[in-house]
Length: 290
Ligand SMILES: C[S@@+](CC[C@H](N)C(=O)[O-])C[C@H]1O[C@@H](n2cnc3c(N)ncnc32)[C@H](O)[C@@H]1O
Image 1 (cartoon, rainbow, N blue to C red):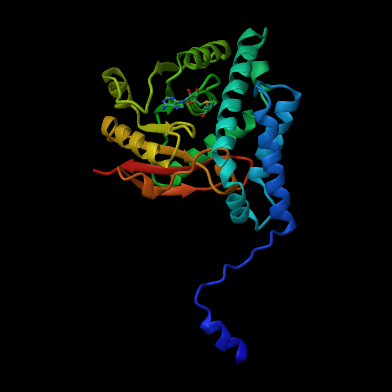
Image 2 (cartoon, rainbow, N blue to C red; image 1 turned 90 degrees about the horizontal axis):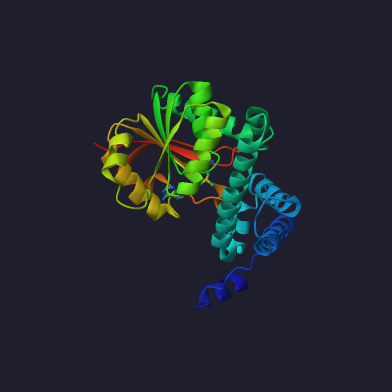
């Protein structure tokens, strides 16, 4: 009784103290250490950089149960920098493997050595299954935006699923490297250079208008607001195309920007999938509002 009446007289709420459990403290410490370690490198593939990214991805995809929200709070000050390191590292790794594949005497065999090839097969299978679940027919013409120097999403869609594929990237060197890989492994795919964050040239609008599915790569648009603008522009250019908007959930948001249905006012989101497997990206299946 005394305690209750004392409590009711307290003028200001006393902030609750949260003591981090060992999982929160340990995961936070590792993430900060990996950030610091990667920030000291040039992010080019090699024993140290590969091991650090390997541990970072594993930790973000499979953290100890129950500490995600607290860890995200603790590492909030490092989140932008971690995403930026991950994006640069991914680009450098793809450029390295693109060169390796095109220079190899047997490019198909070399592509099979790429350590994350299986992830792309899994991701594409998940995205096609999500389209089916949303009642969307299997795509025949796909535009993959932010395809990069090793455009495996498009190559898997073309080779395994018979889609006609157009790659789009703002970086001409990355687009040329992607073309070189496609040619070396004998998979048909075309590419265009365009920045989706800018108003789209007429040629790009015409090409997008032919697509029945547009894949918005996880690194296209730095944040949810930018993705909202880009997807609205895409909806205007391709009003009949379904968009597969890649996103991230949980600690995976330290690797890629997250986007939610509420961030995409031009789209009606039909389905949202958040894998808990080694597939890193979430995906939103959405169609332009009429
Ligand atoms: C590292 S790659 C990853 C793609 C991955 N290989 C895939 O198959 O999904 C990301 C690419 O996105 C491109 N990119 C990022 N923002 C973009 C934008 N606003 N417009 C076009 N391309 C963009 C970058 O130039 C980079 O080459």
